[in-house]
Image: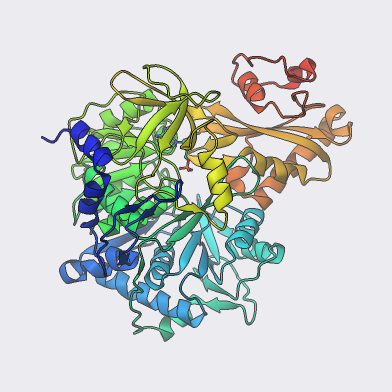
Length: 628
Ligand code: AMP
């Protein structure tokens, strides 16, 4: 049996040889002769003289052997629909979508913003972009007008693809009014909007701008659109994520490096094989959805399950019935989903034949031991935690099940660094590498980052360098902005973010973004949003708000009215996903003498911990108003 430690060492000692071998997992129009160009750190160009296409590798390449094999299995427990697309059918739909994009003026390098629920058209649209060398920017359907508008202005898309509505827990969520609101708010005006009409909600079309997908699809029934061969370094997509400022960061990824990294991870990390069925229960609006609902499984010639709905709707057996029906081999979800399922009768799980399932992978937030133990015991399969982020595109820390299946897991730890990642812990003040076991430091990665990681931030190289590469004092090391420790065996434990990023149910949200939405209310003077530990969701957002007038503080009715307006405002602006679990009205917020909000101290008090050193605090009494 292969030894993971040796595999890992080889990836660091001879990265060119290592990644040259991995590059053979995909098709190239022109094979790369150069593997890694790191001549301009911290920027890195993987396979710089190779040309390829992500859609060719995800779809066309499989047609000779797997035209009739399921490629995309779409299941909606919201509408009760289910549809399987073979590779041949997927290919047809993607070519039609690509032809529509051409019709609507999308060309190489143009951005297409995709604001869609979990429907097959989302996959068609992403793959169609890849096919013609357009850059997709998928915006999570749970975001609302304000979030959408800021992404439209940053990405400057030629086309927006959207739908009449999504559905959550049986409740229709109209998308079109949110999109229209965003387009009215945004400075940039896309040429066209392509609308998928699911028949869920009325969606008036703006003449000259909005186009109906169904009729255009008919028109292009037989369309043939060739894959555009692009340099490996051609941007494949931009995916926005939250940071410390209110302005989201457009994580930009390449084409060739990403394809190689994902193809390698399907084999080495997920131990998957062509023909397997992979079920990743996430959303295409998040990085997990990009990498492991869409591209990873398809690159590997698997069938991928795309699921619209909740894990407990119509009941907590819905996912397990799906595993049985489609003989799912590998499953991937978040700890939050498992915590929710854990509260339901185990009979739901036991009622299905889960014998096809080999492994469950969990990621996106810390995995607590009781949840890990419960699900491993209930399913009777190994459960593997994996730690990564939007920026890296594939796991940083985990156990490479495809390399060494018996590598021991340790409860509470996602595992060890994956091949290609030079991971270390660094002192946040001195920047010194921390080598002794047990020391807490910032998890950093020495450059060059392996293939598949972000190339830069869209349109903002300077922010890419200053945010990620200049945060660890005195050295140019990539910061993950996570605290961690490492034990004597090299296993890491993640302790939480070093910045003001919240992680609610595995969804990443920025404190500043939510605070800005709240302070947009005319009755609000200031706000502080912190993530507070929660038994189900890992964290929830709690907002401490200073009203402009004393009324809402003194009068309960006025206070309730303001609170309701604040919650509604955040939902309308950012989306329900960002709505705080609680709003607490306070007369003053704890700050340092230089006026910096003491979010860490607020968070500590909310979690019943010691708020730490308060010597820099302007008014020590301010903390008295903070209540868990
Ligand atoms: P995102 O970019 O939305 O995927 O969020 C990435 C962040 O989620 C990381 O920086 C961590 O703070 C957290 N995270 C992701 N996976 C894990 C994990 N397996 N264990 C602990 N934290 C995680």
